[in-house]
Length: 188
Image 1: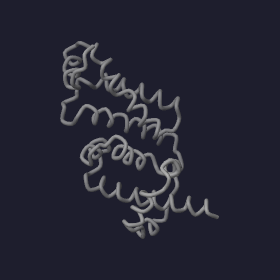
Image 2: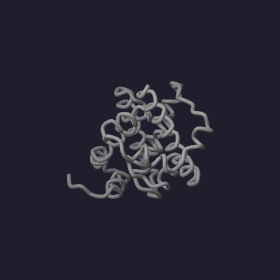
Image 3: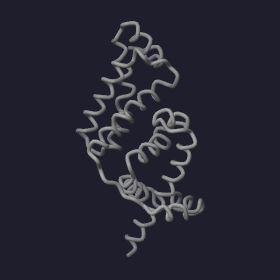
Image 4: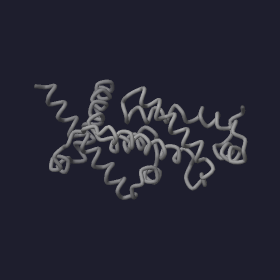
């Protein structure tokens, strides 16, 4: 089947031709699974939740009004599905003293995130990300991995624009604190 825009497939599905859903699945199943896996960190759970997301998407496609892009709408469903599942399991996440976060300068952030060996930095960053709450991880993933705009992230998460900006800034500082502690532990 030839590739058309998301809206083309949505309109066809809304008109009763469900064959176009396979194209949307091909287009979005991998990124949705990837996002969910990064949040739940369990392959089987991620597969099941991704299936749940696409069942919800299919059932709700009739209500899609194109007020945002289809990808943003799908990510919103995926985000809420994953966060809901995580909350059911009540994972514990690392708490960091607010004073430590507030004292991080922009220069130190740039220094830490800019110069280390790339593989080493990625490994440290993955370990630090695992210590963040799922909400914090999702915001970083949407912004840096999925390259979603602040507006899209606000739409997906239900946060205000200013809250997304503030959280993104604070999460970067939190990551800095985590990475600094990891580096100190390695040097001991």
